[in-house]
Image 1 (tube, one colour):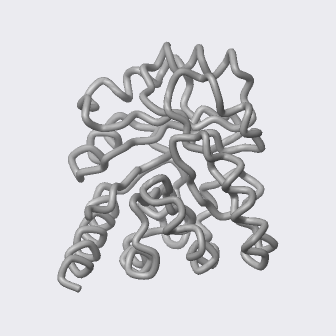
Image 2 (cartoon, rainbow, N blue to C red):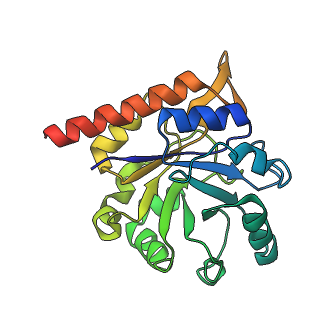
Length: 225
């Protein structure tokens, strides 16, 4: 089985092209105004011009009203919606596109697997669930959570989940070896760095290639085993 890769938080057209060239199965644009990786509705279509039809176009929203989500999806030409805030199961329904609901995995949820399973089961009507690190900025923190918390859920969810949070070329193979997620999501892990400072919203083509190579190698090892 091949692990699908979504590269999120793309703000520049050249980074979208590089993500597609690297082999990403999905690209993500952030429509949360408070995010340093946000893109405007006016600029977004230009970012997607060269995205082939077999690559998913995911729009990320945080606690946005329904009308805004629907208008943005139509104007931009999104194929999937990612709801990354405090949306309820009802908020995820009736939006006309497949919805991926993000669940932010806090330390409390890591310590209480029953609560995490119950929370995830409430969103069974969504196309998929994305598990991310809990952070004040609704993702993109570059911090990983304890992946073992997802072990009880992995088999139950089958192919309907995505691992996110703190992934990069250095650790994604370990994550795949531990959990065998059907898909992984990366943002800050493939961004440019000046010293130790991550340039939020500015991707690094070499890091994207390295991430994809690490995923492919981990998949190869799984097939051998």
